[in-house]
Amino acid sequence: MNIYKLSLFIMLALMLTFGCSKKKEEAAKLEKEMLNQQDTTTMVDTTAPAVTQQAPESTTAMGNAAAVPQEETQAMPSQPAGEGYTVQVASCENQTYAEYLVKTYTERGYQPYVSTVTIDGQTYYRVRIGVFDNLNEAKALQSELSDKYSVNSWIDKTE
Image 1 (cartoon, rainbow, N blue to C red):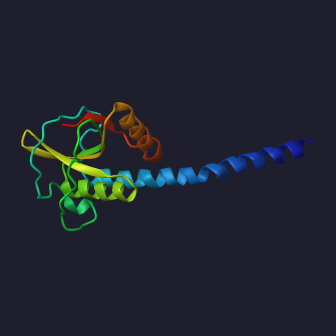
Image 2 (cartoon, rainbow, N blue to C red):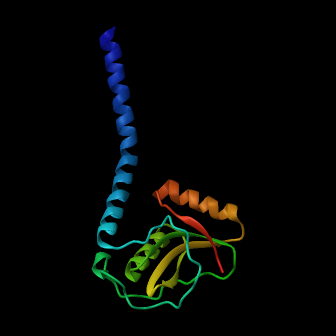
Image 3 (cartoon, helix red, strand yellow):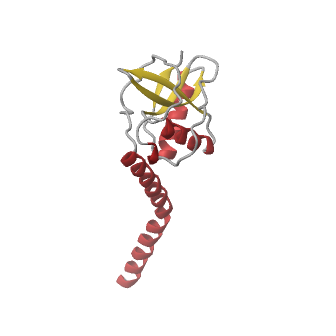
């Protein structure tokens, strides 16, 4: 009888292990991608409140552009028309990295855009998604991004 219980326990443990392995692999892949990006690109603290001052877009790459897959710098999508709320997923000093994030979120089915701000002479490229009429819609997207991609994002008012 003990062998029967032991084999049942082992089978259950194996099922749990293999059932969770796909999520673990996906999480490990995302973590590795983020670590590679963080090692090669300087990021701005994404937990700090956003500054809403806008500045003209710059077309020069900032920082170590070799950190992100090299392509010609292209015009990044600008803020869609309308006012309301937006979800900011990143703020970075490197325009090429911001372009990479725009491409990544576009491939994931979102419509990201970039706004720029200059603080103390440093230009920051803010990668944002959507313009929502109400806060609940923005919170729903923020929750989705957190659940699917473990993204620390925040909601900001658009101008």
